[in-house]
Amino acid sequence: MLIRCFIHSCEAIVVRAILLALLLGSLTACVQSPTGRSQVLLFSENDMQRLGEQSFAQLKEQETVSKDRALNGYVQCVTNQLVAELSGGGQWEVVLFDSNQVNAFALPGGKVGVYTGLLRVANTQDQLAAVIGHEIAHVLARHSNERVSRTQLANIGLSAADTALGQSGIRQPAMAALGLGVQVGYLLPYGREQEAEADRLGLELMARAGFDPQQAVTLWRNMAAAESGNQPPELLSTHPSHGTRIQGLSTLLPQASNLYMQARAQGKQPACAR
Ligand SMILES: [Zn+2]
Image 1 (cartoon, rainbow, N blue to C red):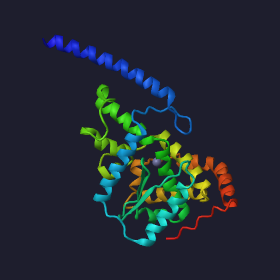
Image 2: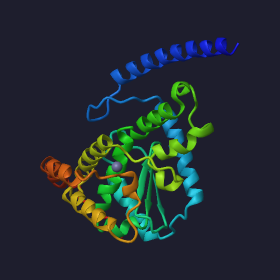
Image 3: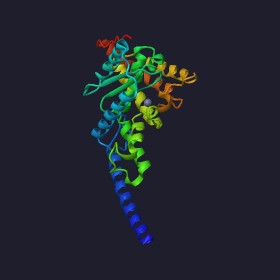
Image 4: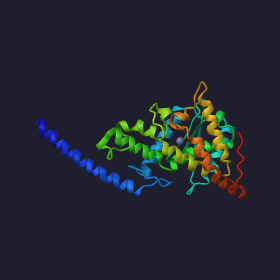
């Protein structure tokens, strides 16, 4: 009996493995990130939007939302300039959390969270735009879908594809895959390729909105300097720099500077004040 069950489950596993391989093969072949990288995405845009919205609502209950009107207006102003450059635009919700955390995130469904602690490291509107642009780029490139897909496959193996998001044990890894590792205590850093991609797309986005891309380099230098202090930036635990970020950004600067000059010539001159 035991042997029969074992053989039966083996057959089932083999069949599922073949189906999964076919599924992944087709997904890998037809899905590409904005920079042309192949991606395995198991979930729909709607799934990810719902997960982003649910997670954001949960965070707003858990964390303290800042009531500082000037600071809220400042963060909203920077985000608005960036979002205006997105194809499709849309309304993005921005929330400023009152916390010493040096952290920020963006979620599918058009959600941006910034912690007041970040404003100690991001000293200017351009540096803040560099962080928020980078976070929005993670969303545009569907990095959370990619990570939650990988996590799902790694954790649940062959029964992965048909488990609904937000159910059973997937929720915490799913929130971590959204870049909320520090908040949920389940750390899942972005990968090297995802970081490089978010750097590139984020730099282009800030430059097109009229923010000085050179300030992105300054921001990550500030972040590196803060890392050696008493309270290392929480952002760096989910956004490792791999030691090559500043070098990579510097390589991209000439092209981004052209976009910046064009934007300024078109009258895009953000003046967000804190
Ligand atoms: Zn990142």
